[in-house]
Amino acid sequence: MPRTPLAVDSPLEYLAILDEKGEVDSALEPNLSQELLLKLYRFMVLGRRFDERMLQLQRQGRLGTFAPIKGQEASQLGAVAALEPRDWMVPCFRETAAQLWRGTPMESILLYFGGFDEGGRIPEGQKDLPVAIPVASQLLHAVGLAWAAKYRKSDEVAMTFFGDGATSEGDFHEALNFAAVYQTPTVFVCQNNQWAISTPRSKQTRSRTLAQKALAYEMPGLQVDGNDVLAVYTAAKEAVDRARAGGGPTFIECVTYRMAMHTTADDPGRYRSDEEVAEWTRKDPIARVEKYLAAKGMLTPQEMEAVASEADAAIQEAIQRYEEIAKTLGDPLQMFDHHFEEMPVHLLEQREELRRFLETENEEARHA
Image (cartoon, rainbow, N blue to C red; front, side, top):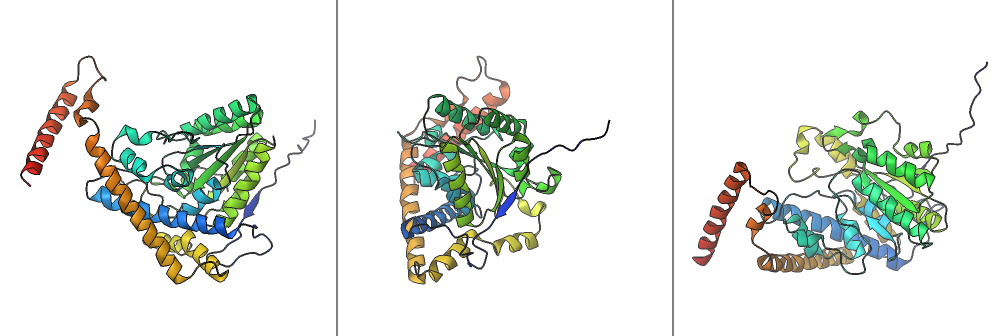
């Protein structure tokens, strides 16, 4: 019998509106209010400067390891801005800017990365899930939330964030399959920052794009310039509106770049070149939106400086609150409790080492 071609409808588009020079495609430019545009800009600056300040704190030993977001501000904020307060936001571990937009206090983020579980507490009434460290595990949680919303005949939408590395995990495929089968109101936002720790995107998949993985599950897939906040917002708004109207899930691939390290325990200089970083630095999402807003008469150099100063002041106040709160929290030695009926020798040794260290620190503090 002859081979018969199958009719598979598989359109795939790439969306870019604001280029790296700050020039906009007027035919695609979304009609956003000045208030929203300036809010997006302020949070992009706040996210960047908070990220840089946290790196200083970590290097000073005042904060634990964390995953920097530098370069990915547009991917996060353009997407999360399309949500309503009644919607769910499900992060992985690199969504600091999105968390700030949703109302998470900076001191809570500092507490979490300072090693205090109390920092993971979600503010009352805020429909977000805590940070998820296991790669891709949060996608299933987002689909579950969306399925529950559909079951209850609610108009809530669940948006989840993940990296390019997560698309190589089984949880990713299970989540997309379930979401498509049950047409859940889920928006999958992939921040393709080109590297899964030290594994480049080219060594993870043979697919020309990550967005095309949506086609296997018969859901809309779209690739956008992830450093273009206008394009990300446009794509996310379309996906959120479709989900809310009963149109099911969408997969958005934001092509962006991790300008800093994977986490503060990582040295990216061991696996990527300075030339590559410099090329992506020229595509900085904040620089291009500054040019765009300045051209529209919405932002002056003086106002840019004011935004940065206001962000720095807010960050410093949050650091002070964090350090004051940290002093009131429990004994660090408690981290060893309630894990084993009989504590292993290596943990006993570690506990004793920490106890001696804390005693020395307290003694030095008394004599300071």
